[in-house]
Length: 505
Image (cartoon, rainbow, N blue to C red):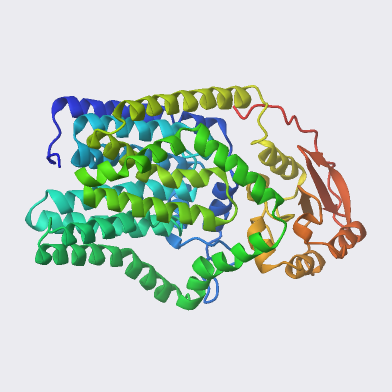
């Protein structure tokens, strides 16, 4: 293993340059308005009011408070777009963590290639790593967990070793707190420690001390969350059901319902997996794993286990959005380091990294062109919400059918319906009982925005919502592919014309 500690001057310069390039490649975030997850988490954070049976009060989300705190802090510091600045900082931290981890595994030259791989993959616009999605918050923490574990196992003496192990445990659990399936860092740490012990690279007493320190660090975020729940009167069983129980039910809804859209996204995900170069890098590692195991057995075993868990997390996610692939980046950069240190297929690996760079450059060019020229549809939901906000009264409310939270956010209005995304609607209100009760209540929403068919996912097969809309609402207008309904008993100006081809900037 390469020595840790202070980096030589040339390595420091390389890392500084890589960080600068990484931050520069986060500029595309300026071209895109808030995306669904960002808008939804911001709405949840703004309305946060914990209740015994609801972590967040009225609005519902299936993430831990750790993620929502990021949006709450961002709102205080700079508004709804501020969390993207946090993501840029975490991206820079990930670059440093990749270099330090790969340098321990394979030396400075391989570390440079691994770091370049991380920058290239994070720059790929297809998985939106520069937006404030839960993956973007959690993946850098996975990499930090891997780095600190390697430091603790291989180099740092005394109390520093235990502090690093504790930091690794905390980072790994925080990653899971950002998104439930980002357990790769914890798996890497556990397998690395156990394999090192079995191969007698670590003495049992030292391995036990590192494991204890790691568990202690991992418990800090868990205990903090339990204390928060106790102070705010949130039932732990309710919190568990929201974060994990819901995911089981949602997977059943996804696989048991209309699967044409998820299967289409599987195709897109596989195409991106290959076309981005990510799949090639992983396959090269897998075919070289025997040689890598001969050179770095513990790290190779840990990376293989990490890959297995990350792939399982993507498969069990069910929806198969392309940003899921960013979860594979920490394992992939270590794959690059292991192939290079093994001396097997070294030239082919470097050529594959270069091809990944070409792929990212082409996609970035296309992404920039479509957004600057107004050919992208990403601002459409925001433009729709703004159009409603222009003619609405301040105390009006809005419901977006089956969940498009950026419309709610852009309108500036509150929603009387707690589910801001489509999956909670399909899982928790599949008969639209709560939605119809909201529309028929004593204080119905003045505005209802329809982005898809009323019977999307088979939610209104009996046409009860359709009948309700036609009896109580009138169509105020259309905006960027959305039909906007207005409560007939609440006269408002007509919806303004919207230039949907207008670039965001």
